[in-house]
Amino acid sequence: MFLFAVVNLYTSNLLTQCYRTGDSVTGHRNYTYMEAVNSILGGKKVKLCGLIQYINLFGVAIGYTIAASVSMMAIKRSNCYHSSHGKDPCHMSSNGYMITFGIAEVIFSQIPDFDQVWWLSIVAAIMSFTYSSVGLSLGVAKVAENKSFKGSLMGISIGTVTQAGTVTSTQKIWRSLQALGAMAFAYSFSIILIEIQDTIKSPPAEHKTMRKATTLSIAVTTVFYLLCGCMGYAAFGDNAPGNLLTGFGFYNPYWLLDIANLAIVIHLVGAYQVFSQPLFAFVEKWSARKWPKSNFVTAEYDIPIPCFGVYQLNFFRLVWRTIFVLLTTLIAMLMPFFNDVVGILGAFGFWPLTVYFPIDMYISQKKIGRWTSRWLGLQLLSASCLIISLLAAVGSMAGVVLDLKTYKPFKTSY
Image (cartoon, rainbow, N blue to C red; front, side, top):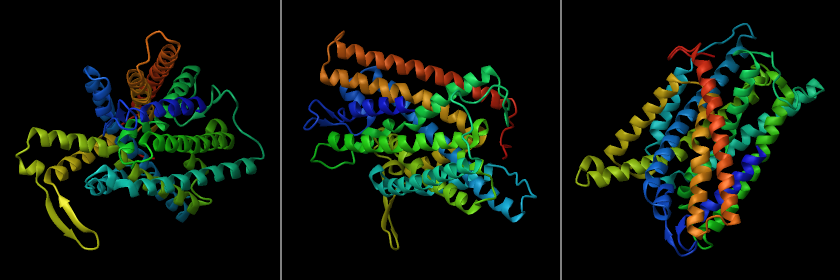
């Protein structure tokens, strides 16, 4: 985790310097990640970058839909278990909760531009701090209750019986590799870093402000990741659940768990929009260039909304974004394997978007000569991260294969 944080801090700082082509203060602005690659690298790498970035953003929306449904069900099951005094196992399907989350996202997806979702980012950050603090506090309380630390430095023991069956040596390897993908996903904000940087006012120079913001955010999130992960494992040992908050049971203190899970849902509503807006903008700008005379694509109609002012309705935006949310919801219902999906997304996006393109653009931007010590160091870092991404992809795919053995489409329940 610490190594992922250090690598991401370093490469994200390289990426911030690529917001402008040439001089980092007065050079040409690049409004998106893809524009930066096009301006600095050009050629086939632009299409490759766009393909990887937008597929990854689409996948993130799917992962967030799955995660939100898990937390929504946790709230429902917690209250069900409490009202029945533990007599009802409270099993339920995840489909209805994914649909509910999808309906909310259809509404929020009509926010026209990326810079207009700034308030969602603030709400999401507050919610993230809330549920992380609750999880950490409950982990500390559980360790105090146990009067000892569970688990071991070597991780889960071979032979441990879990919901997925008995852990074998092979499965332990797959789970370890899958964890690499999950950690890579946890530091995946680089895929929208340029888009975020474009909302920053200057002076001071955008890259300086963004560097401070990324340093602070990575430091804070890493501390919380490590504390929550370590205390969660110390509390539950080999029986630690994939979702830490579900491991504390459904009975006591159920109201605190409900608050934490509600915070997760609210956080994911905002995060879904933050990660989807760049993809929305790309499709809409491409369509406007393709059909500039189409009223369906380009025309906007003023709709007065009491207390909110005037909303500019665009029919293409309404239809396209609704279809996008429907697709992500449908795929989430088809593949509700959150940990596996997160691992795959982390493996797929980490090396190219967090490491390779930032390093390649930085080398080109700063005109670093081949075979110099700095060039060799950057290439070694890139190659090492590529190996990690490949290993994480193998582990996550193995997890999907295992899940598919007992999987029935649209019939997943908890």
